[in-house]
Length: 526
Image (tube, rainbow, N blue to C red; front, top):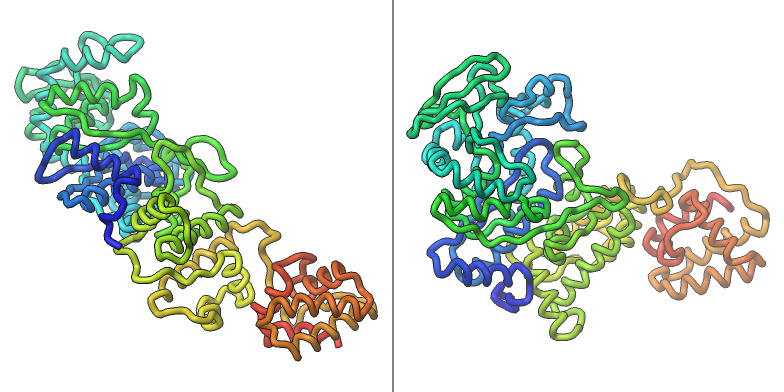
């Protein structure tokens, strides 16, 4: 199915139409995103990245050329040491300096900003996202924005008037729309004293009281403050679309001011929307890079395959808050994805409207082109049981599953790895178990229960245990023959097999384990 099908039904397609309608015909549409790499880039930041990428896909599906840029605001000030960073005492000595001057205390990269940037850049292709990266420290230090800074200075009063509209107290009369990193201390503890009307700025280092004049065309020490920098870059890059979080989109927030300030630079604000925050199931509040309280994309990809990770965002409107779950909701999320896939490939019949919606969600959830066939449709819960039966050996699980097509193997292998990660790191304790070892301690049984277990072993030996219904009926028949309560037989069988009083549905579990695994365990009780 081509990506042209039903493209008007998804929010990404609706916004793509809006961009074309509001910005008019263009040779290339520019869609932008960006973040300050002040700490680990978290899954909340990823929501912005993928929201833009989905609209980029929608525009391209309509036949438009698109430039997708991602700005690292790595010339921002290092304001706070995140809790999750090593050698916090060392990092603290670099506060108030540009993030790119802070060392990477892991020792892997040239600086702190680069370490956080590369952690994301290496993972985004895994989920099908490949933007053009722009490094703002590089831009400022090479004086690319010298003209932009001069334009801001020339319109200083106009910009001040715009910003003052949204402030409870006006900016001071001697305010300048520019800040300087001291060339004496590298910190931003400076005061701009004057501008010569052309390219020279005079500033004072407030720590050392030293005064210096710099030329904007020859030094990277100066930069614009955020509410001026953002609209300047909209104009410089000719941005047509860029979303922002609800903090920026709040009344009087940076988007409100920037849509006016951008006119100073001879441009119009891009089409935008507000995206809501993401929480982690079981944890409240906003995720924050600077605090270190984060779940990263890497963390999410431990539990969710790339396609299911995309599905979480594709199927949720950006202005809707939702939680990333690591609890039993994981089972439902995989089932929802599988249902969506079955609908796409015509394996499940639904209404025409539902089919159109789900087919588009499925297309946008794929990392690349839509696969030629559905994935191997094994329920996530059952897959978890299979992995536990085989001690996490993915190849062993693949070896016992029937009917796996070569085109399904890689996706199934990925899902197996995610399932095993979830079982071992996140699943509730009652969900985890290990098949009893041949030398494990025997469960103490009375004569009647021992007879029942031996009888059950004989039945398993003789039966075709692939007939799960017949096996379930035989378990009850064993209980009746041996005069034990069925519930007690179930409990005892689980204790013998996995050391717990409850477990997966017993007949299905014995079938999944196979005779070669359960009979040696049962036969120890003869």
